[in-house]
Amino acid sequence: MTRPPVRTAPTGAVYFSLLGPLTARLDGHELPLGPRKQRLVLATLLSRPNTPVPVEVLTDAVWPDDPPRTARKNLQVYVSAARTLLGPAGHEGRDRVVHGCGGYLLRIAEGELDTLRFGSLARAGRAAAGRGDLAGAARLLREALDLWEGPPLNDLRDSAGVAEEAGRLEARCLTVYEDWAETEIELGRPAVAVDGLRDLVERHPLRERLRAAWMNSLHQSGRQAEALAVYDDYRQLMARELGLEPSPAMAALYRSMLGRGREARRPAPAREAVSPAAPPSCTAAFTGRPGELRDLLEVLGCGEERVVVVSGPAGAGKSALALRAAHLLADRFPDGRVRVRVRREDGTARSRAEILAELGRLCGVAGNAASPGNTASPEGAAGGDRAATAALADAWQEWQARHRALVVLDDVPDEASVRGLLSRSGKCSVLITARGQLAGLAPVHRVALPALADAEALELLGKLIGAGRLRADPGAALRIVRACGGLPLAVEVSGMRLAVLRHLPLAEYADRLDDPSAALDELVAGDVSVRHRIASGWQDLADGDRWVLGRLAGLAEAGGFTLDRATEALGCGERAAIRAVESLIDAGAVTSPAGEVTAHAALYEVPRLLGLYAHEREGV
Image 1 (cartoon, one colour):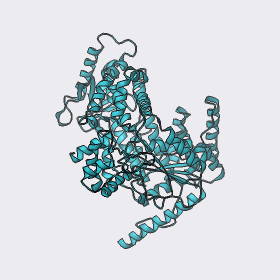
Image 2: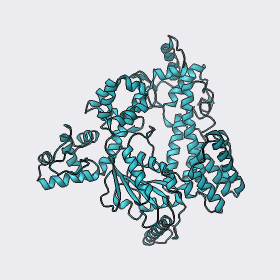
Image 3: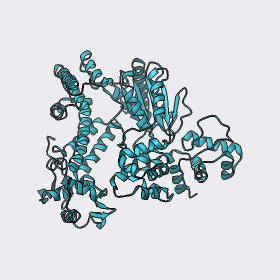
Image 4: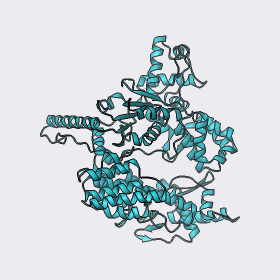
């Protein structure tokens, strides 16, 4: 916010800014945007780039109370002005503003809109941090922040609809600022963040992560008394405004500053169950899973079980459940709660060295070996890498032996990825999420996530589309969640899609989802795709398991299949069929009864959406 904004639009292209007042520039010259109502329409379209915006949303933004009878015609005039401003055609000659599905969609590229560029740089910065490249992360996050000129859309916030979008954009900017400040502190450069953090805390006094970063930056700059005063001010503010105490993580950070020198940049107690490598996720509040959540809290809270595996298919809500449990267990783990993803963004497994390096960075653990790659020959370099990894592993085990923390290892592909990371002694606990059962890990406590019950799925859908709309056609709502197979991700995507397509009757959308050839095409909202998530789980399966799943998916359409039907469909003997089905159960692709039952009496199921995807891939 203190540097000139970085403009990236190509010559001859209009560059729009929302991270500040709404502006449009062409080759460095600011363009007139017309009267206020026209600017409100443009701001609403730009705040939802490349996404259909219903006419009702545009109407509410311009005339929140009493729209005139000519509102729709007036909108057409304002949209026409936007087309003129953007130019007649975009990439590959396509129209820039498209009318359809009861609304308008504005096509715009990353280099033409600051919020798209901001998001791209922020993702790149977090990915760099996840790889351990803190200097690169700081540079990319700072470049993103250079686009932030002030409160987003601050000239149009008297419109409730625009103000809501502006608040969402500002929250994204604050999160990136926190990421950047923490990275600079980790690099040993706290002074560069102090002043900006102070200004933001004054504007957002109850935002705890900003406070913690400000405390750390002051502390690491040698200004301990000021750092402690920041906490005391926050404690009094919380008591006065909310009647609450600071969180256990914040209190632990304060205690660490009282008892330690400047060597501890980010004490582990200040860590919540998130990390810079955390993936993007749907925004719906956590819903359902009361039995599974209670099980996790009882097992992890009593301290007797040190490893818990939460398993379920892609999109089942494993990460959401794990993070919810970690949040509720704050008082049981005074030395912090840390989450690390075990896969990269492309779904491939991260190396043990990468995971250890991130755990070490988050918890202040350092190995005693030289950095990898400092030896002269390739053989020596490989040996140096192994030595450094071994040193980190030893240091990590030593840290776990001395602390009581909860470590969330998220999205684990297989047992080998986490062996050596689990605590061998001490009071640390590890919560693992995985699509498969990870049968090779023992002893562990296991929690398998089934499909959401109808009531839970309807509650989740109602949070996204509104309880009134749900009550207006409960039968259609029930058809929607059942067509989603009770998969939380699919229900969330349906809700997000219906929240945008407010004109679409629930019954019509239910009809679309009931069509096996169209269901997966309908389950897309922005950059969130159910097909993409299922495809990632499909890639985890061995080639033989994919073929078997393709054959069994056809049997599952009638509500399940028996072992006899599986034997017939696979064209093999009974023992081979049992092994094939149980392999898919282990991989999380087939569900089996919760209670004990013989293999012949059991009714097995393939989740509906996974079965549809298997049909697509295998042509069954």
